[in-house]
Amino acid sequence: MSKTISGEQVKFFDDNGYLVYRGLVAGDELKQMTDECQAFIDNKRETFFRDDLGGDDETPVGKENFLQILGLWKTSPMMREIALSEERGRIAGALLHTKSVQLLSDMILSKPGQLSRPTHWHQDYVDHSTSIPEVTMWISLDVATEESGCMRYLPGSHKLGEKVGYDYDGGQNYEKVGMDISTAVMVEAEPGDAIFHLGLTLHGAGPNQTEQQRRAYIIRYAAGETVFRWNEPIYGPKEENVIGKHLDEEDHPFIVRDA
Image 1 (cartoon, rainbow, N blue to C red):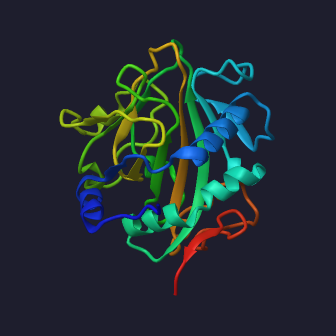
Image 2 (tube, rainbow, N blue to C red):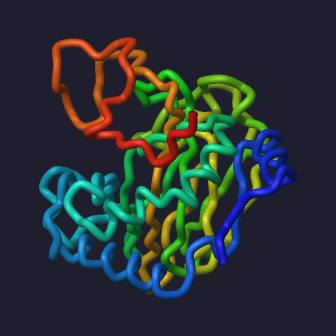
Image 3 (cartoon, helix red, strand yellow):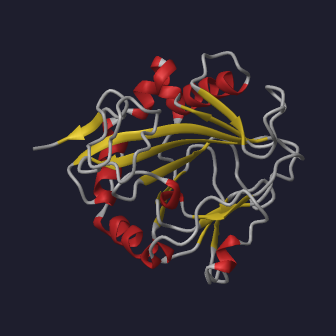
């Protein structure tokens, strides 16, 4: 059965800056996605970029505190097919209010049990070089609970503009810019549940305090009208200056391209 999105869901997203879509990925596709992501985590696949967001440059592979792997679609045919799903691209397009959608990036975020650090409150878009806030789809590959570090969102925060980028420090940067998280909501998830959020929506997640890892596969979607607002291509420089230029279709293929 194909997955679509209703006007009511789009309105909720417009009002709140996030949307929970239960069971968006299921069955064989969910198993294949989970197995291939784990192969990347186990370093059994060619990796475009791998980093430890909670450690340092000396962290051995497989011992990361908060593992980030970028660009799976570039090296895995299976993940490319998943990342370029037109069905999910059209859902993102409805949330972006555009008829053309490009793949901005994809990644794995994995927090091992009894080890990982929290994800401090931040807005993705503040650190992004693109001209239009992207829509991120966060797919849970495991049961995500408060104890394992499920996602948290501040409803309506996307209407406040650019306030705080990714916080690598003590996690208090949102307070320094006057953002109040007292009305934040916690979103627990089952495997295959997806959460969409706008790049300006303030969000975070707690540490994983369970014995099991907490894995998520993430796809970021860009409106086809997007250009670069500063000279920082997503996958590194290909030319002297990209400011004002549209996303390179080689690195950011169109998922939906309606006339």
